[in-house]
Image 1 (cartoon, rainbow, N blue to C red):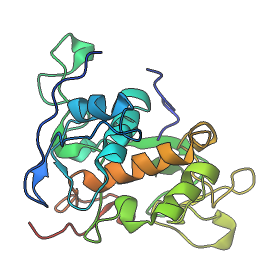
Image 2 (cartoon, helix red, strand yellow):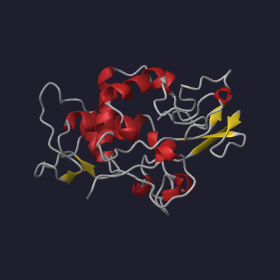
Image 3 (cartoon, helix red, strand yellow):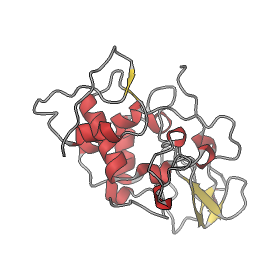
Image 4 (cartoon, one colour):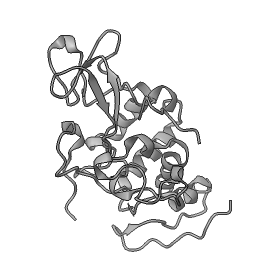
Length: 239
């Protein structure tokens, strides 16, 4: 979620694979053609998901729609990929270099891209402030973006509220996970990079679909990486 590029504006439906045993890691579950599952985005979303999805306990229709929004419309990985894990594109598969496109699954939505500088202080208390994209993957709780609930996620998208308090006002004399930000003019409790003023126009169903999809993607812990903000590190579920 980024000042460098806020949102990159961006059918035959393929046959749907059968769901295996409950809890099985799969990429394309059966979606029944009832009134709630006829949205063409569902199967397209499963077709373009760049990582294996854990569908245990999740709503397949919402996951498919969420993948469509994340991977075909909002370009979330464009800002939330992990440079420490290889960045957005797999080696030899950067389409901007004329190479065949392939997303780098190892760093998918793990966060850590830097934006700025902003007026304020960084992690070490030295100006300026650098803002890091957040880790959107689910932690050991199974909930995305650091274990946030659906209602908290909706609030983030609608209002930009920063539940992590990653960059409080420098006037308070305290540092968050990323440092502190000059306030005024910046609101310290608001996400400064994420394009929430635009994304907040989405329907409740679409926001819930994004959340459901983020619950299905693999966890990224950033274990072994040094120098990232503390809120990017997390404990992943046991394999």
